[in-house]
Image (cartoon, rainbow, N blue to C red; front, side, top):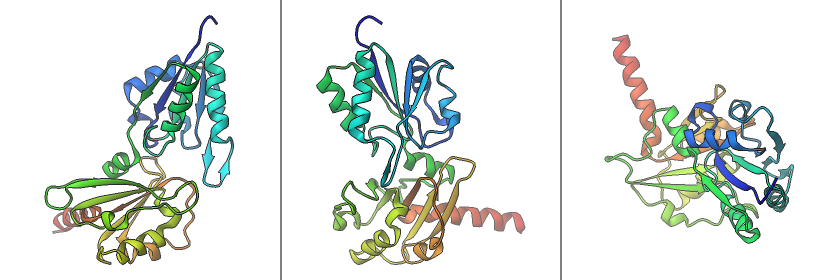
Length: 253
């Protein structure tokens, strides 16, 4: 191939292939090689060209198939070879997806690129269970938080997270659920504040565990989580349960 190729950083959405954007599907079909994460399922990969090369670069916490710097080198090497590269990530590449680090590597190497946003987990998982992330009566702001950091426990501004009138969405919140809930209570949130954990959101095997900051850790204790999980905390986390109960009561009556 003549001249450099390019890299598309594509958000695959939270799991359901139908939540891929039209642009994401179009860019994926242009790719000669697809570098994909563990959270990208076969339904999403099916949008790629049949002749496209697939390279698994997935990572799960503490178990990296390929180090991040190696992913950078692979993207750059393939693009400079003249290939069109799709760097396919679950959710949105720029929200806890290390997209910023990859953009920096591409800029440094002089590789043309485009970022294609995707439906992030908070939006996809909440919508699946009819949970509004904001609500005029309950939550006037939304904060997206990582449940873990590169060196272990994230360094968070707990007093800010515990201000009233907001929804907290912890990505990979199951990895330190008990500690997260305890910290929130310690810093001022009431123990009976609704909290819900959504595992494998938008996929057929999706599960929702609903409780409070006090009860939720006990409800999920001993369970095995094989996929991603999102922790939602705030008044809105209990709204779907209330509505479902009301609908069921009305139907029974």
